[in-house]
Amino acid sequence: MDEMQLIERESMFPTWVLYALLVAVGILALVKLWRPVIFQYITATFVKPPSTIPYSRENLSFFGRASWMLLLNYFVVAGISISMVSTYYGFQQDLLIFAPTFYFLFQAISLFVAGGVSGELKKLNEHFLLLNFTYHTLGLLLIPLLLIWLLNVNYSIYFIYTLAILFSFFWLLRVVRGIFFALRNNILWYYIILYLCTLEIWPLVAFYVLLIADFKR
Image 1: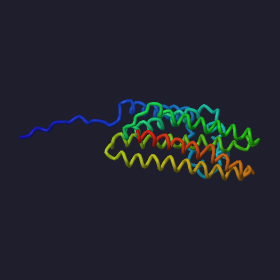
Image 2 (image 1 turned 90 degrees about the vertical axis):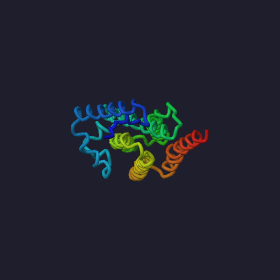
Image 3 (image 1 turned 90 degrees about the horizontal axis):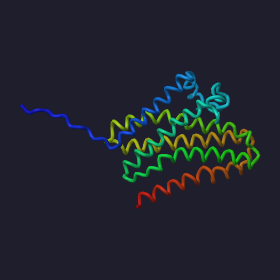
Image 4 (image 1 turned 135 degrees about the vertical axis):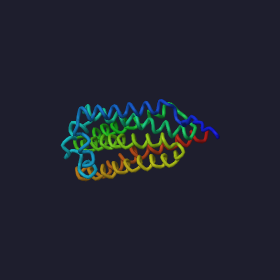
């Protein structure tokens, strides 16, 4: 009778990815323990202005502690996502894992600058809440997606497509809702166009070009 032998399963990704995901889960557990109701209102923010949601001021505000814990979760899992994608394509760049953090800070600072230059800073409160909400939600959705990816590395290309669709959807959702909020607050249309061209579209184009340059090397 032939004997059956267990073969050790090799993973495409380094072991630190799993530990980092466990850290992200731990962050969410702390948020849930500290603010039990915070996750109950997230779905409502998709259809209502963030400022009208009961938890928004404390848990979506830029300086809220719960907000930064959820943002930290996003920075961790988004960095893991970029690391896994770059590992799959074989162009590992350690600094790329910080790209989501830098991009968020760039967007937040850009809103402050745009509001200060235009004199419309008070009218941009909804946009700051929307920015945080977008990345809070992305961070929650990425955890199960990355866990499933780790268990099904043979389907990596489909997970990469899913990640691209997910990021594109939330970026488009934030931009469209942001335009709606800006028009509702009577922000001049040329400020909106200037912001979109210089602080939303241009950074993404630059990031895309840099990635293409890495592929060609």
